Image 1 (cartoon, each protein chain N blue to C red):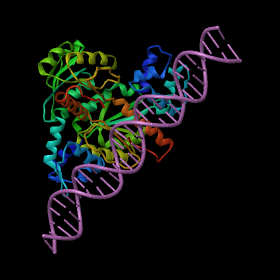
Image 2 (cartoon, chains in turn orange, cyan, brown, purple):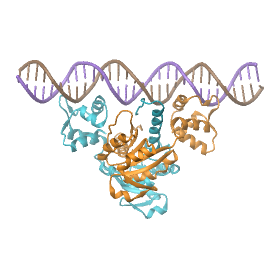
Image 3 (cartoon, rainbow over the protein chains, first blue to last red):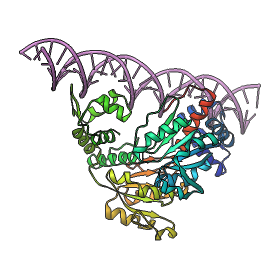
Image 4 (cartoon, chains in turn cyan, yellow, blue, brown):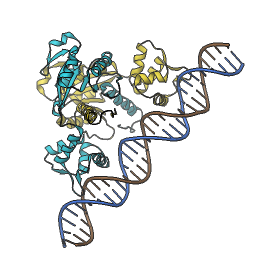
Length: 203
Length: 203
DNA sequence: AGGAGTTTGTGAACGGGAGAACAAAACGGC
DNA sequence: GCCGTTTTGTTCTCCCGTTCACAAACTCCT
């Protein structure tokens, strides 16, 4: 988030900024921001602030956004389509190297300039392109078996869009994005608003 | 998440479950699950466990999933497309009542059985269908102005997919889903793995 | 009926993140 | 060269969520 805020500031022509400014842009408290940045090192100048471009590079280096990360997407339904075309991935150093789907009817399609290939090709692709990150955009029932195959093929980080809890061995990271749970949380607060007006919290 | 886990258990034919089972299904600690459920009331039976169907209903009622929530989606690009077609919304009580886009070229299209309409129609739609939840799937630059219009039109909950910090008045809830940040977090851990193997954390 | 075995609900301990507050450091003016 | 001003880096404190641990409560078996 800080990296994104810095990029925004840089595009706006700002060359130096205080923790207060950057925190406001990123939507956090300035003390928290300073503490977070202090974990990376001392890249600010007291009495002056942070050099936007310098700090930007330091953060980018630290989080590994300077590298190129190959990614495979499994499950080319509506969501998989959208993810394959999502420009935000490419611009942040991610490169979609393959789109896989279990359904042979989809293997004809070309999405985002890539052939939709058979899920059976997973192992070969992971090996050839040294892929370590996989995205699961399949229905819930298929997610666990896809994850198992991914892990067996050597993938060590999974972004899961299926509404299921995945169990994976130690050493494999899983992050879950659950679109309808986000809406449910909003609906919950919405319901509370109509019952007890004036007492709402964003978390 | 508990609701989803319970639905899964119910479909599997389970009629009663312990906190341990349910916690395992939902992927959390059993003590946490019991404490969470205790906030809703005492719906379990000591020595026995929870009645799946009964608990399911109680949670559904509490979080407002028994209601029908009308939703508008603004920004019908790749992501908006996918969201409009996403079946998970409908099955969890959300009804997409309108798709809006600022680009007139998109107004011809029919997506998920709905016309893509002009963003100018927002106020009328919100008023007519009593919409309180809006989804922003526009590019980052447009997000804040869309949010402002939504708030002015009477929407009080916003799900934001644009990679921007939205500022909204008190009383309006915003939740943000940032797809590329999720990948960046995975990439960060991935980078750390290759430097210091065997010490990884999922958070 | 009573005791053994489970399982919930909750009080207490732990841990960690977030904000307030302050000392250290850099800049600028005189 | 020194002092006032600004802003970072860091410590201290507070608060909240998570987990542990145990008493209360329920079932089943004898």
